[in-house]
Structure formats: C-alpha cells, structure tokens
Image 1 (cartoon, helix red, strand yellow):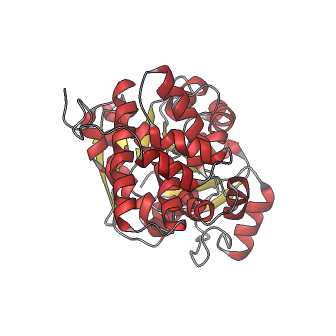
Image 2 (cartoon, rainbow, N blue to C red):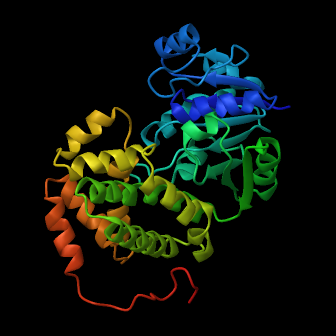
Image 3 (cartoon, rainbow, N blue to C red):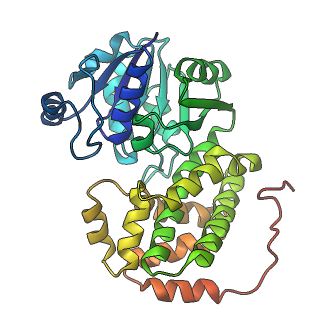
Length: 336
C-alpha cells in the first residue's frame, strides 16, 4: 500500500482515486475549488463528470494542498493550462523523495513546452513520470482492463510507478522516450477533433481511416523532429491512444469535432462540451512547432483554419487536392 495524492477533481483525477483506493492505497484527492469538493462529498460522486461512479468515503477529499506532504506519489490530473500553476502550488509541500507523475495531455500555450518540462521548471528536485496511453476515465473508474505507459528519464521512478499502480485492471509498460510519449498524447487530440468532424460531416469509414492513418504520420513527423523515437508512435502512447480518442464518444475532442462537422461554430462547440478540449488548444501550438522545425502537418494546419472559421468541407477539399506523393515517408515509423 502506498500513500497517493491526486491533484485535480476532473474525471481522470476521480477515476484514478477510485481505482487506487479499490486496490488498497491510501488516497487523497485534492481540488482547487472548495464547492466542488463539497459537492462530491455530499453526493458521493461527481454528478457531472462521472455520474454513477461512487467516491468511497475512504478517499480523503480536500482543498488544502498541504495534504500532499506525506504522499509517496503525487499525480497531477489537471488540464494543460493548469499544470504550471498546480505544480507551483504543490512544490513547497513535496518531500524530496516523492515521485511526481502527470496524466494530462497537451502542450503549454505560449512556451510550446511539453507538460513534464513545465512541471520540472516548477518542481526541480523530484523525479517526474509521465503516464499516458489509451485510457478513458469512465472505463478506468469502472475497472475496465486498461494498458498504459510509464515514461521517465529516471528509469527507477518509472518502474516504481509501474509496480505500485499495476493491478488486475491496469497493466503498465515502461518507456524511456518521454518526448515521444508526451507528444503522442498531446497531438492525438488534434486528430481526434478532425475525426469527429468527419463523423459530423457523415463522411464514412474510409475517410476516417485515412485521416487517422495520415494523422499518425503527422504526429510521428513532428515527434521525430523533436527527438522522439519512431517506435513510440506505433505503441500504446501513439497509435493506441490515437485509436481510442478518434473513435469513442467518451472523448470530448471527438465530440467537439462532431459538433463542428455538423455546423456548430468551434467556440460554441467547445462551450457545449463544457470541459477542456485539448485538441483545439494544441493545434495552433503544434503548427507553430511544425513551422519552426520545417515539418509538414497539413491536417493540423487545416484544423487551425477551421477553428478560425473556415468550412470543414473546404478544408477536406484542400487535403484531398494536395500533390501526390509516396506513402512511405523516410523515418517516421520505420527508421531512416
């Protein structure tokens, strides 16, 4: 049994809390907003995000960040825009030996940094681990078998997280490719919005299969340019997470895309989802990184135009009308 503090009362934070408590860990769930904590305590569940998933009274609920001071593992489960502030708030109360893990998927707007880089700027002494892969909160909370990746530059910390979190419903593999794991997790949200747009336009399976496949090529191109390993993009954090996010109604990126494809303006679509749509945030940042590194990302570029008001059908026309080329690009999934 380990002492685990989870920061964030969104769906994933609650799901992890429920799972960790189920398998015997001592769990503290921290939330920034006292009223949200009070509501979860009152109803025994988060009625909006995970209705029907009981939050056991054995899980300590608090809005006092000092509660993390005895934790062996602290997991950040907040949207990308809140990662820096949350890490900064937590830093003074962490013991030197506490491992800090992040499950958020995105890029920091402005700095264009990966989230582990953001965390390490605010939490300088503790080992940082990234947890990523095909993992819907709704399914983790209900004990659906799930497999993810634990990535860190500190192999011992990645293996320790693997050891304590592995249970009959969660299998974890270790990776040294932090860059690839994080970029795969952030960029797949962009493609998931586009996959939703395909569904909203009722374009069919052929179109969506092509979009997912070529989207993976884009993700891997940028990843390679930024130092990631090719193999990561054919693994759980890459194609695994891409498939689940592009095909499931659990994915808010996918659901936002469906609304956009149906003609709802992007800002209104995000508002209707009622939660952070990371793909819409990450698209412009990813395109900036692509241009800085001389990488072609036509799907991402067209999504940015759609977010600025372009018709999705016009974006599709331009993608289909691009110059013909060879499919097997040098060095994306198959090495040099």
